[in-house]
Image 1 (cartoon, rainbow over the protein chains, first blue to last red):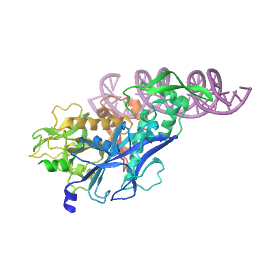
Image 2: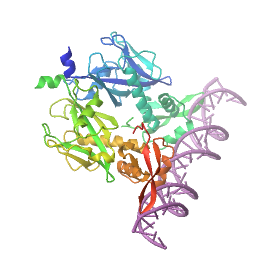
Image 3: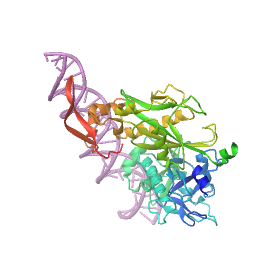
Image 4: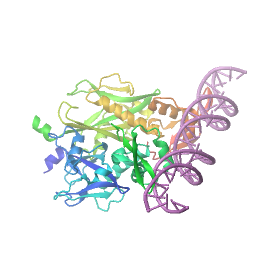
Length: 220
Length: 220
DNA sequence: TCAATAGTGTCTCTTAGACAATATTGA
DNA sequence: TCAATATTGTCTAAGAGACACTATTGA
């Protein structure tokens, strides 16, 4: 039991998969079906399999493969958590990623009979999380917020077609605070990743809203 | 040979130790004394020893322990490099840190007979580096520059006592560009980490310069 | 016409950047 | 006095934030 523990660390990957639903930023949690931390809620994760994964991104993708039925866009490495105390099995090392799922694909989550899954409010997770996943979630959330605070548009979180107001709502959900409409749109002026969809509008009981799409090859 | 390779990744830590000398940002390189990449220049590194290191920061400190004779202040995790191709020994995972050494301690580097060491210009390393260390160095440098571009003062790079002009030169060395004196000093107004040392000045063939020190418990 | 939301304009205040002016020393 | 660098001040332009205004629809 202890020889292996001491010679090799347990290397794994955890992923905070974010999406926005009903103007609320959510993160995907799974209920653990094995020991340790059996039946506790946790971020999706996977133990590194050197014979299967070409690198840690591959491990991260594998961690999500049986959780959602679509390809995960935008995987970003956040940080590493390591040491002797974070996992009861001994010396462990977890590389944390975050991933973004468009709001129109939030139902692509696979409902398994083995593992319960849940879209929890990212800022107000009711569950007590396994291992150091509460800290990891906080860390991933900070990284995402920092990026959006720096004017990056989280285009991977909106659907294929969207209005500027929808985009603003998504940013507000990520940031956890309201934004001024005028200031927000002023910023969008020079953004190359936004493309106007001509002759397409969303109608309601008000002035029609212009529809936009993402430029091919946008990054974030 | 291959069973171990496939079951466990090689986990190591590399450290980019930066310092400023003669207004030039430098990074510590060591000449490898063992295979693989024998005799090539590289960032200081260490293989994780789970029975010795409590976490990866401990591994990073150990990687520098026989390189410099003083305590390393400010160790910061940057990124992880992983995969099957970056190390000839097989599946490997390297966690990159950067560290800062005050300019007045740049001679605390231990000259070993086994390993040659060198303070190379961080932006213009003449050597071809081992493994993916060129990429790692670029990554660490970017992280450091980003932090200083965001107005953080790299106080760990200056000596115990310094003038504001010296501090400016250090920032310029890190950023790789000149800064406006007036703008720079305007920013310093509200910085709590800077403490004026009363009745101490540096004299030369000009108006004396006020001497400053770092506040106890400063972070970066 | 009105409610509702889309989209734009305007004012102020802060700050970065450029550059000038002043201060204080040793030689 | 002069050269050299420290330290401070001033002007301008760009941008953020707050908020008001106009536009266009369905009911």
